[in-house]
Image (cartoon, rainbow, N blue to C red; front, top):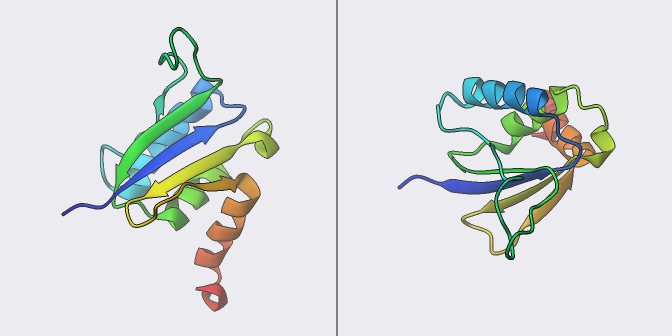
Length: 114
């Protein structure tokens, strides 16, 4: 059985940067379905739409790889980027800032913190 993780990415998101991010996610994961989709045009609660929100359900999610790719993306306002992660094994959402993800990416590159 495959493992699925739900991701929501919000903040000051640029469509061109997101296209590049999605390409890198597919390359890093080696799976063509590792893509975050634009949810901004989806309707929530009638005709209300969310502010710059991308999301996806990703199989075989690797937080360290995701964190590295997200942190290497040249965001205009990185302090506004937030990620919500829901793993099948958890019963709650995890809210992470880009700073949190930078720490996660650093753990992968530093053998002492693995």
